[in-house]
Length: 288
Ligand code: SF4
Image 1: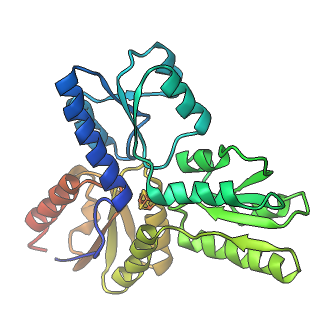
Image 2: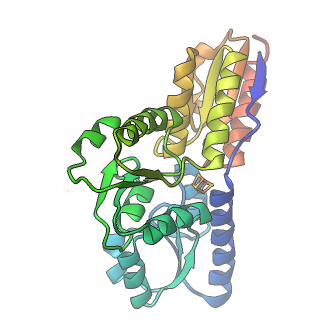
């Protein structure tokens, strides 16, 4: 069995920085005898979260803030609503903001857009980044678009200002862009402020090349990780079997006999999981 690795593995810069801020906070919490929280799961990988829990980090949900003993709280890379942030500060927490600079830039695009525009946020429903962008406090009207069909439901006639979630799948983004360009050609003003972030794009472009030179693809990452699932979805376009796994136990038995396996990871996949899976593949499966 030959294993071919993607050039882009493990954490992106935003997640790496959020994790570093968390480790610094854990150290500070120890030295100052303060509780250390993350607001919701810091990253979308349950095994990475378990390791943080083992170091004493408490995952705090919004509904529990009112009754929690204040301590240091790290905000996740994909942003936190302004009103929620104000409330956390009011409750006496020390806030460490780990929002990725790219997501802050998306927020600023919305804040600074001329008020004549209707803001279109292209993002997955219920994703924290979608919630964050939708909650930006401006007087614009806004719509959340998760699918090309949602563009048919934009009722008002205002010009459109479009901001996209950093990890939105490229294939879906392409279909939505085509429809937006059609609206533009029909003389509606459409401004497209951004596209998926470089880290997301690089991994999706790379997985296409990887699919061409291998017999199947393994995407390592959490089942609740949006970027991991987007990467898997994108890889499925290239005709090879694609598996998403997050532990050595999930390695599919059908890989026995496969000659070339491509390995890619989401942007919230820790290296210890990648190493564990590679070691198992190189051991048990190496004779096939
Ligand atoms: S996926 Fe992109 S936008 Fe999201 S945290 Fe990583 S670098 Fe930042």
